Each structure stands twice: as structure tokens, then as C-alpha cells.
Image (cartoon, rainbow over all chains, first blue to last red; front, side):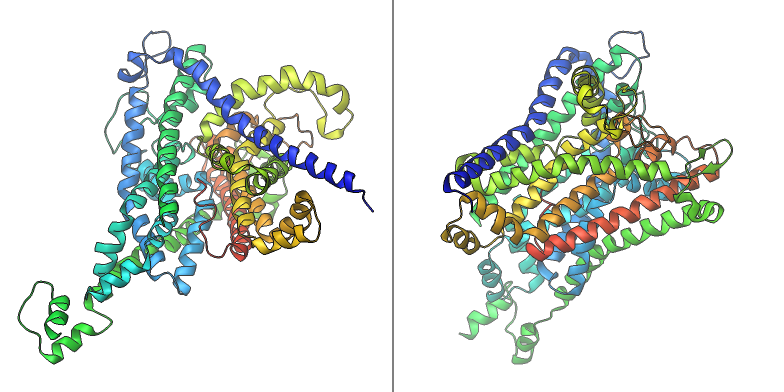
Length: 280
Length: 335
């Protein structure tokens, strides 16, 4: 038999511990952001955004090739992944009640857990090997494959939030189901779907592993889709493992740019999604 | 009355509909519906197709190595690209070991965070703290790796280990000289990376516990902690186990951060302080520079093993989480 005092003591100790755990969990985020600011800001200057990498020893190299490369590769990923992901999400929300819907939902969640490096070697066998060379196109497709399952699930959630009364109103006015779905339901959910795209983009923009054997990386400024292309995460990876201090400094600066990009996207998306959920 | 119905069915206000035409228009299935539904279904079917294609491609490319090494591939430790001898035991061991270390660190913390966010935190604190924890999942892997190389490893090696070694060096898992890149460093980084997933999914699971359970626990005279420990956590047990397995799946497949800090050595060592290797890291390092077809095929076979493990782990997690929070997109929103 525990005494009342002892029980209350245990209770408040454990409550205190959960406070501690939450603080400890947030600590790495704070430390990482602080380190990025401390080590990264020093190397960010005009050259960083306007110049490509220079051979070691020369001054004034930058990350412009990697920044542009990331924008292009992620753009390609969106071109491939957004139509399929959004369509799958609408399918799951509108017709996903049956066995097929269950299967697709399950597969989407499983695909979401497939390691991105596996997607990378898959993209290599399907795109790089037949084409005979590494390319930004293959990198974009690899990222697109990662984007689809994420986007499908967020789109589904956003479309489900549309009140049934809107659907019923449109159907009662004589709209066929497809028009109801496209013109009323999807349009109502459009802001949420766009937000879902941002979440997915934030996720794939930081992916490195699928690009290793697809986009490969490039020390020069290139916008050729059929050739190797640099990307921010790839460039950070190469510079972080390199032997020179100057490279390390640039890696920190690149990481700062990447994380600002990613966190801005996800925070913005999160705020919109939260507002949507409370609205519904 | 008829007019209203006709204009509604035919918004372009065309010619008056005959009774038969109106019936046709009122049929539940219109041609547009069939097309719309088919297009969406076909696009949605691309996902299962992709999964099957990935599996098929891995198996086909892994075949040469599988037929050459057989199941011995899983139990042998030689990895010699020059001689063409490959065994993935160190890779599989390293993958499981680093993930286990990550779970040991992350699970208690993540569960405490989930309990904090659903039960104990003042309401105004829940959203901001929850968001901050979830943002940990948004930090790109390569940045964790960068941070691991330049901050975490020096911290562990130069500050924490010199103090802790007096107490810990008698424990076998802390044997040997500590140079920095190690299973320990990888495990710590992984624990930070999977914590937000476990915390977010557990939180959803705890939120799905009916309030009546909570009230019953308190009504029986339990303290809030006792209610959490004896009523709420057991109620959500299946979902929480699912959340942990989901985190395990993330840890097993994580590539970049691990590659950068684990040391990349093909050796089985029980010591946390020694370098190791994981399947994902080996693929990342060696795939582009594979020296022979057998080497490439061995990497595919290792990849197939990783794929199989993560598929099973994720499917299991999904089933467990869905049982609690039925069909919800828990976890996929925690990106």
C-alpha cells in the first residue's frame, strides 16, 4: 500500500520528467539552428549566391550552381509527382472507401517508409542505366517518387475536410459527381492541397540519398536537364566530407540556406494546415 | 417546378428535356463520372505499381549475387570487392545495432514528450512545443550529418567520453579506443531524427484514447500520473508499439546522416565506440563506384534485404497504428 504522499510525489516527479523530456527533445533543434547561424552566416556573401564552385585555393566560390540545381530538380519532382499525388489523394478521399482505396492508402504509407536510398537505386536502374549517363531528369523523377505518397496522404486529408453539405448542395443542383468533385470540392480544398505540396517539397528539397546516383552533383553551373546537376544537399555532403576548412565553412553556409528554405516552407504550410483544421 | 429541375440539370439552359432525357440525366452514373473515376483510379494504381516495380527491379538486379553467394550472403563478414567475395553480416548487424541504440534513447524521450503534449502541458504550450518537436523531422538528413561530424562527434569524444569512461569502460559495449565516428554517434543522431516521428504518432494515439477512460481513472482516485501510466498508456499500447516500429523503420533506412558519422567499416563489433556500417550507408558509398558486376549485384542484394525489412516493419506499424486511429493519416502528416 502506497502512502498518499508517496503517490503524489511519484506523480509530480514523473510530470516534471515529462517537462524535462520535452525540453531535451527541443534542445537539438535549438543547438543545430544556433550552430548553423554561428558557422554559416560568416560565409554567406554576394559571391555565395552568384558564383559557382571554384577549384580549391581560389577565392570567391559560391553555391549558385547548387541553389539553382536544387530549384530545377525539385521543380522536376513537382512536375512528375504533383499530378499523380494530388489525383491519388482525391481518389482516396472521394472513392477510397472500398478495398482498392484501402490498398492504395496502405501502399502509400508503406512507400512513405521505403528508404530514400532504395528509391535512388531504383531510379538509377530505370533512368540512369538506360540513358547511359547521370541526369537532373533522373534526380527529379527519384524525388518525384518520394513526393507522391506524402502528397497523396495530405491531399486526402485536405479533401476530406470539405464539409459534406457542400457536396450535397452541388449534387442537389444537378451537378454530376465529377463536376461536384472538381469544381466544388477540390476548389474548396485547393489552399490545403497547395499547402500539402509545400510540405512535400520541403521534405524532398533536403533529400540527398536519392540524388547520389541520379543527379550525381556537378561542380559547374549547369541547367541541362539531361546532364549531371548540382543540388544543395549534395554539395553540402561533398564539402562536409572534404578535407579543406574553406569547404567546411561553405558547407555550413549551404546548410544554413537549405534549412531556412525548408523550415520556412514547413512552418508556413503548418500554419495554413492548422488554420484549415480548426476551420473544419 | 419542371422548369427549375430542367435548368438545374442543364445549366446552359439548352432545349427543354423530354421525360426520357431527364431520366437519363438523373441516372446516378454519368459518362463524365465514369471517366473521372477511371482516370483517378489509374493514377492511384501507379502507387502499388511503383512498389511492385521497385521490388521486381531489386530482385532482378540482386539475382547474380544471390545465386553466387546464396543465403550465406547474410551470415558472412567478408566484403572484398577485389576478390569478388561479399557477405553482408556487418552491414545487417550495423543497421540493426545503430537502430537499436536509437530506439533505446528515443523511445522513452518520445513517449514522455507525447504524454507531456497530451496530458500535462498547459494548453497554450502544447501547439508551440509540438511544432518545435515536429520541426526536428523537417531538418534534412545531410544537415544532421554535418552537425554530427563537426559538433556531436567532438563533443562525445573530447568532453563526454573522457568523463564517462571511468564509469562505463568496464561494460563490454563500451570497449576499445574511441576515435569518434562510431555506432554510438550514429545511434545518437538517429535517435534525434526518429524522436519526432515516434512522438507525433504516439501523441495522435493518446489523443484518440476516449476521455471516458481518463475520467474513469481519475474517478477511481488515481493521480494524473497513475491515470496516464495505468489507464491511458495501456489503452493505446498497440498504437504506441506501432509508433515505435514506425520510428524503427525510419532509423533502419536512414542514409546520409549515418554515412557521415558511423565510420563506414565492414566489421562486426559489439562495442558502441567502434566504427560500423549500415546497408544504406554502404549503398551510398559504394554504388556509384562499384568495381564489378558482382559488387553492384551484391549492393542490390543488400538493398533488397533493407527494402524487405523496412516493408515488413512499416506494414506492421501501419496495422498497429490503424487499429487505434483508424485509417487516419497519422505519421504522414508528421513530415
